[in-house]
Image (tube, rainbow, N blue to C red; front, side, top):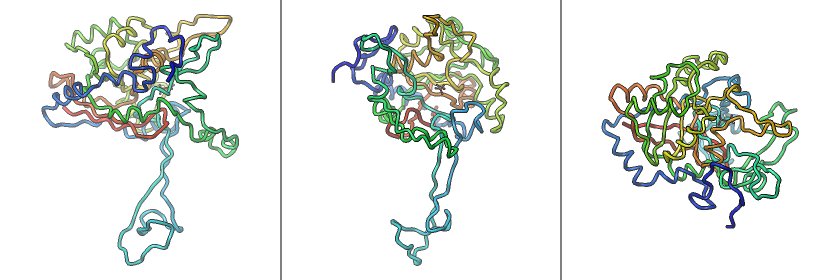
Length: 361
Ligand code: UVW
């Protein structure tokens, strides 16, 4: 396939794994790196790194995202648990003893513990050099072409289902199934920001991160799946599905996406992906934004780390993971590495996915 860009964005590495690559830096998690992860398994003990998927609770934390709504499958007027076994819509066989439960869920795929695919955040960028900025994603895949918006259903809002306005949104490129097909298994490395910084909200830049890595004797190597523990998810979980948004806005650190040295380190360290127990890995604080007025309009991302990772460098982001128990165990045992197994749903075209990641030590 011809290259789909003439200009790559500044600071990007489009084409690093080939012009058609859709896996990004997860390519660095090779079989040899998986074996390094397996070598970290010494106790056979596992930690689940997911929140219950109905946390945070409600829509206060992010009104765009809907909590799971589960429905029982009703067949022939019988609810789940009352139904017998049948393969089709034919009558059930009264001589069979099985009773069956099925259910259906409507769930924002990025409501709780999640992966962001490379189709989640792109940028308005003039990739083909014709002077017109278009919505473009990693490796030049375009919205409206490879990444399709789905079919508009203008009646959705009137029906009280605003989330259904665009039916079957489809990412024909860069969908989350690309990560699932990799397996998302490798060596995890946990950086315990909370241990050093507490749970007060602060933006962590390059200098501070390097001090923490030095203090804890951590080296991030090529292909590592890097997890940042801030304590945010633990505070959220304790709120028991009634999130106190004002308190959460004051809780937990995040990376400073405006720190160029930090962004360079993310690329130069050759880490494979970045994961945090907070909502965005980076700290989204308006006062950190440094608007450049261009003809009266702002030309900058709201989420600079998302732009740098997902759009420019093919680095998947994991958010709202639950890392507290793992962090405590690793510290008590003088360790920071583990085997991480974290496949997303193999749901073709999805731009994000819930996950139930497992750390094994
Ligand atoms: C946005 O809200 C854009 O995304 P995320 O969940 O990745 O922080």
